[in-house]
Length: 258
Image 1: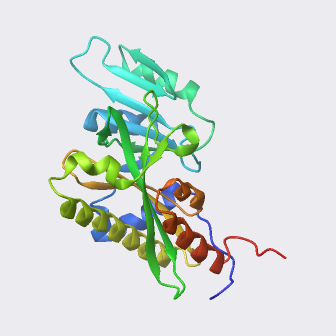
Image 2: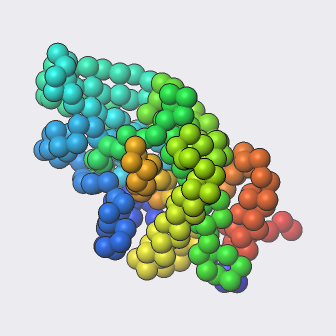
């Protein structure tokens, strides 16, 4: 296998634009635009809930959730970490947002109401890698269960990893349908990898964060070109991590011991 340097792509916006260029994947991408007061105002009142995220960032740090519920006395809600703030006006909420967000470029993203397990939101990370034949292969899927008082599911931000089956068991009538849906998510991950490689030659691995809504539609929230392979050690099936590590070592993710 080639030992060429592995390419990293930090910009969420650049990766989103590359995926939006594919007609098939476009349907799975929440509306995402560069941050501005007008964008926040427009998307929040269009969808009722949005996330604002740093263009470049990891572990869910700096992500803020905004909600608008017109019938409430205080219709605007802002949540950052475990802190929640309610406002009577958009202007008041926006001023607080500017004080809380990092001093870096942000994007605004259509909010997706995640499925829940025991009252806590969850999504999935699909690991996709160049295999030993240099073809894209989805090598693992793991659920990420959010901390009960937080808006992000990231393991490094108090999220809890769980097997796919544990989280989706209550949403399917039989195991075959649940397995078929799992295969669908894995195939979506491979499609994402193939599409991104055309725009960013040199990538060897990606972690695709996929939300599932109440209609069981998958949504691609984010793609990481430096995914944490060790998260998959949390799965009861040790063979998953062994394969992930073997592929990563083959394409040069880890330095060889001397």
